[in-house]
Image 1 (cartoon, one colour):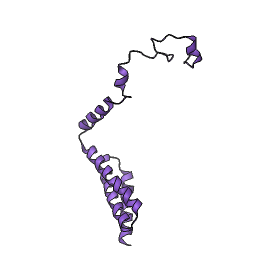
Image 2: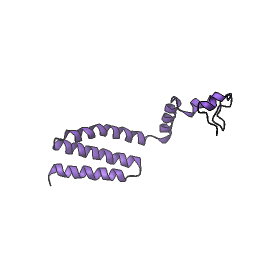
Image 3: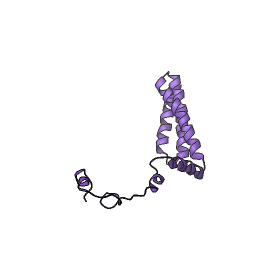
Image 4: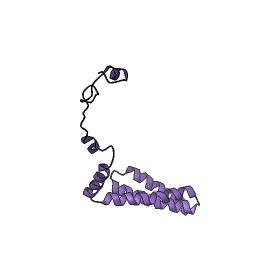
Length: 123
């Protein structure tokens, strides 16, 4: 068995191991090891798509590993800050004065015959 073949088998084994992980930190560590093995494999056989892909995935997996190792409270605070500025956050709808009733119309809306023709909910 040649060195490139051994690197290929090692990289493939690490990918298989990564898919079997249940927790994030060990999975990212195995993925980083897999990326390094695939980069070595791709470079040794001059397989540009292989080493380029794993060269891109390596910093991504490294960043996600650092992110997963942060304390949970800090991750949640960052998530909440991002959600606060999201247009679809529940806080954006909390300030709305109108509420939707059982029939699909806002409680302050007057129901006219045009509402029925335009496809208003009649159920």
